[in-house]
Length: 272
Image: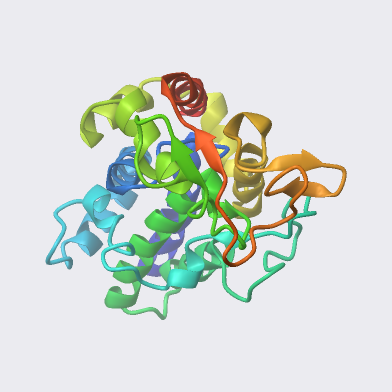
């Protein structure tokens, strides 16, 4: 098998395994979440593919492992328009065209870097960067609020109360749920979650696509339990009488307490 063929195996297997947490659970997407996802993905690779990933990561002056390298697109923020996908407020799901509101999005970013990693004409440096991006993108697309609405910036402009978490609703899903609901280091949590993976789940991941992952995230972000938006006959609105958050408008506040975190920790555990 040629090096280019190995890269294709690496890329497609990596992309499928990074769907480990399936419909956008809360194990991503601060540094800890990304590391957990990428450590699980790395361990799921076949030995030959794992060695190719290790060879690429040896090019990284800042990271010793693939899991560490997966936070690279956030530190500092690189390709900022590709970390999420925005849908219209009246959308039911993301359709085959993955760019309803923008020419760049996380779904297209996955396809773009998968193509680079699979290309026999790409340089080792190109593959190295594509590998780090791909690991990060597949984590991002599984964070529910990365598949959401533009006007409130995916919950960045939705306030929270309760004293348990900080910042905003997006940050709750980025980091707070995993930190409070699943405490531990990335390696330990990855090992625990990996031990619960079944062959049926692996088969389902390999049969799914980036659009499937985005739609699973969107279903969670718009579910009543998340309290991100309010379901109406016309879509999922910012409020029951308010379609979108307008400039200068007072933010709504979502109560994020231990029951909220506990309910969504259970979602995370179920999706592993």
